[in-house]
Amino acid sequence: MPARFERTLPAGAPGLPGLIVEIEAWLGTAGVPPAAAARIMIAFDEVLSNIAHHGGGTLSVAIAADDRTLTATVADDGPPFDPLARDAPDTDLGIDDRAIGGLGIHLVREMMDDVGYAREKGWNRLIFSKTF
Image 1 (cartoon, rainbow, N blue to C red):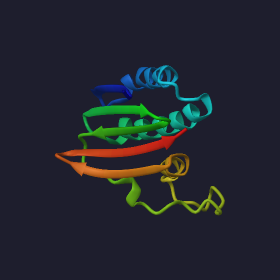
Image 2 (image 1 turned 30 degrees about the vertical axis):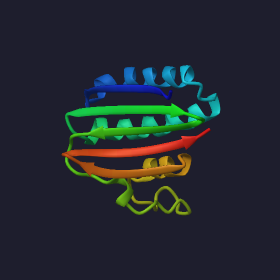
Image 3 (image 1 turned 120 degrees about the vertical axis):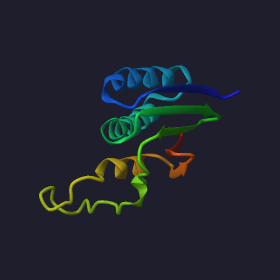
Image 4 (image 1 turned 90 degrees about the horizontal axis):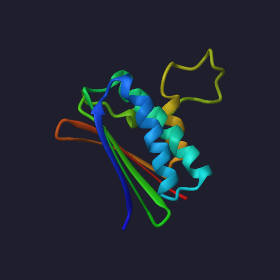
C-alpha cells in the first residue's frame, strides 16, 4: 500500500514553514532516500512559495510514494495560472539580461521526472513525480 500525505490549509505564507517541515519529515518516514528527498523538497519549496505569494485562498497538497516513485499534486483555488505555459528561461544569459521569473519552475522541471498542469473545477493543479 502506498504511503500518503495530505494537507489543506490557507494559501498564505504563515502556514508554509510548518507545511514544508511536515513534508520533509514525511519523506523520511515514507522511505525516500535523502538525495531524492533534497531534490523533491526544492520542488515543493518553489511550488508552495509561488502559491503562497500568487495563488488562491486555499492550498492542498497530496503526495503518494510507492515502489520507488513519488507523485505529488499541489493545488490552489486561485485564478487560472499554468506555470508550464511560460517559456523556459535562457540560462545562458547573464542574470542582468534575463527576464524576471520562471527560474523556479524551470528547476522543478529539471529536477522532477514528470511535471504537468491541469485546471479542474476551479483549481490549479500542478502534478509532479520523481522516481528514486
